[in-house]
Length: 161
Image (cartoon, rainbow, N blue to C red; front, side, top):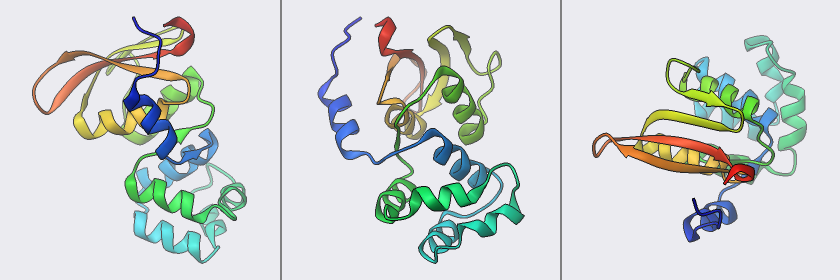
């Protein structure tokens, strides 16, 4: 396998907004529980993200409020495009984010090995989003095209390429 970044990988990393894993957890948890993107963006711009403490007590949303402060346009772009990179993504973080964002479950939807995730079938939209999410330290390898609409992928940490 080739460990060099492709032009596509470089383009993604340079143009996609980058957020922390914890920020992604908080945002995706809210979306998975029914918060609409437009409502979130309005609340963010009103500087009122603390209101989500009452909606969902999984996280301290005042931390998200602090992260967003001064970077509203970055978060707005990430949310509107539904595409962002994670600044530091561990295998555990990747597994949790796949569960929160797409409801993918280990051993049901994919197999997980040390620094490698295999046999995950995704649609084209998910493929594009996942490539962006993992672009900081992971590579997505397309292993089998199921149809024009879905593909099976592996996600490997750059340290094992």
